Image 1 (tube, rainbow, N blue to C red):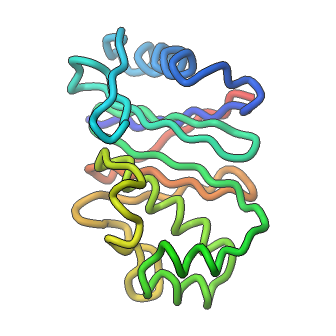
Image 2: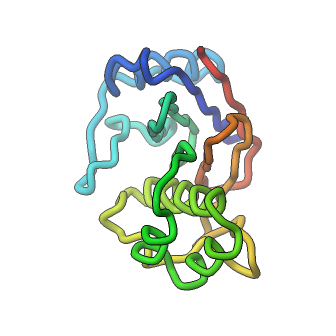
Amino acid sequence: MNNIKVYITNFDDYTGSKELVFSMAKKYCNEFSVERPDKIIRNNHGKPFFSGRDDLFFSLSHSGDYVGIAFSQNNVGFDIQVHRKQNYNRIAKRFFSSSEYSFVEQKGEIAFFDIWSAKESYVKYIGQGLSFGLDNFSVISDGRIKKIVNGVFLTKLDFLKNYSIFVSSECESPILYEILI
């Protein structure tokens, strides 16, 4: 069974990524009876992972007032984006596929942040980050955000007002969350 859990805390309480990862990993491991990790390393593209572990994965993101981390027993990508005023059409035109740009033009600002968060969670999942290029794939099909992109499941979480939050995972699993504020 794959247990995916997202922990969200105030960005003001954010002491550093390693400390947060190990603190939240302890909570996750205790809850799901998984052995605790002891070392974080990075792949060639900068994706952090637990050394020597193929049973515990994480993905970290921060935006606005919050920082969040997703844990899973399988690979996971996570992103959180605050909805803030900016020239989202210009950014969408530069970084999104033509279908995504059209979707943003039709649906507006929230659609922009949903697409951005979905795409960022996906590139974190594949371990290449933004170096992969956000215009190399599309998360839009038939006028909506896809549930699956190249075999990866995209799940939107709607529990924080004015934020877009997505989790990418290898299987469709219920996603638990805990807000630690």
